[in-house]
Length: 90
Image (cartoon, rainbow, N blue to C red):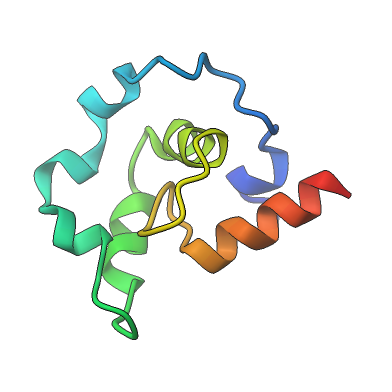
């Protein structure tokens, strides 16, 4: 099964300063604590919300381009983004 992250390019394909994707992102309807859970807490609900968001790929590209190290971005946790970075560099 292919996912959006399988075809993601690095660095981001959108301009680094372009934040227009945030206007339509579903995360704007939830509080930041939803995407930045306490250490050891589940990220499942945030990832589910991201899964239905049209701006998921743009969000993930932003997080990768800006080395976001905390929280759920584009449906991926910190560890998942780290693995994606390592995969794309090799």
